[in-house]
Length: 113
Length: 110
Image 1: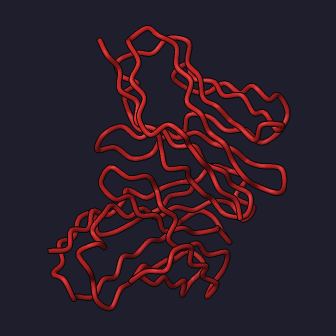
Image 2: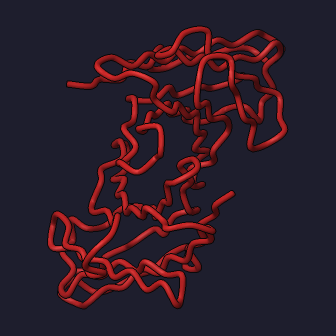
């Protein structure tokens, strides 16, 4: 069966520090991978999606970047965090055509102080 | 690219009353439509999905949704709401990528 791992679960980082959140998927090949952010009281904002290794689409210009070094690995990064980067970050995968439901990781609660 | 709107940010209903949450999508091809629910402090749970065929789909927890191509809508309904239904509800569309609407927060009065 397919599983998705996302870590860390919680993170407190100072303003200006770097960020690296990692997500890996098991049990499937060639998935579409997604990073979402959910700010307090807000909906799910699609940040990045990837249809293959090295292929990243950015939905919202911001302080973050994403990379996909391997088929089932998706990394969210920042060189210098801002206070506004605080939120709940979710990684997800779908089949290549995004026809099946999205499967989510447990999320990372990021607090920038 | 596809997009999803949920016109109602917050809805309050009394327990036992009927519920309808609105969802409109924009997508050039046949849409793959989903409703998710997120309870406070919880992850996202899939309620139901539509790919093709019967435009009225049944989901878990007594929810159903109707796909109306002419209106580009996929509204979620429940005939009798329970207090445990209080949560955030998200409509989503797949196909090119996977995009969520902004969500509707449901409050249930006793």
